[in-house]
Length: 122
Image (cartoon, rainbow, N blue to C red; front, side, top):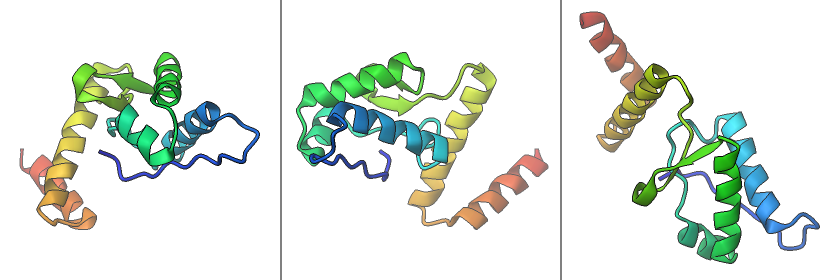
């Protein structure tokens, strides 16, 4: 799951649905949410933000219709990988490797070196 934190301002004139939608779009465009990143569950995010689950679900549906995210059934909602199947598979492999290396405590610089060495050795 992503560590990115969403915020909704209850005093804002912008509806919570739109605030959440726009926050996800900004996070994707800024690179804070990368392709393949898992978004929080609808219920979990609703509880965290003090919103109705339907509000979060509606924002997620609109994001999915726009191609920003993709629902994968029970697996959850993820930032879309894109249309190119080779690029999508490569991103998925890279995301999995990054998660596993981070879980081992390997920092980014060392992980890049290791992947580069593995690529060169093939």
